[in-house]
Image 1: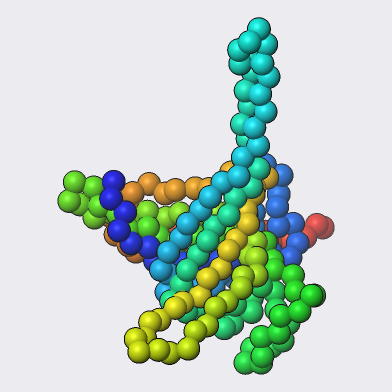
Image 2: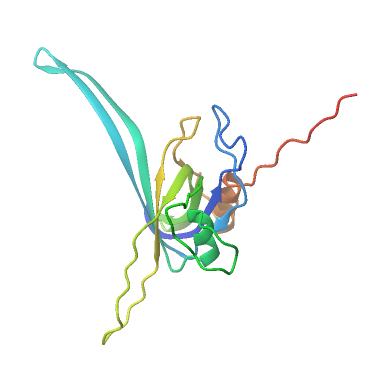
Length: 198
């Protein structure tokens, strides 16, 4: 398949209570966008152990320990930046980075555009459990030629309580269907209604 585009970057923080039920995917609060998506790159860190005997490999085990997701956007909205990194302050105030910030765990999803045998498809990509890491920024003076730079975010991730760390949707024939799939994965959790006893 030929991948040619990426869009619809979304993040949803864990709910405050009972965010990670056993043997299940996490529960989320209200999702928000991370700006017009330019690029997503993931990389996985693995732990390996081997045992040799009689001059040959006897046992070998490889497990995923954690992973990173690097995201580049044209411009991340300031309020999304505030929520993503757990910055203090109310909407419309300065973004204060300090030693007390606490980025929340959450889920990240986006839509991939691709083509197979001349037919266009879209696919949702979902990481159930990630946390943003504060990144450095670079600014440069305007020279004889100008260029735009966007915003970057890096997530560190691990597997959810059910062992899942990444999900790819089935191929969708419309971008709307792929967005709907992402929305479903990051849907805000609604606690079950309490039933009274008589």
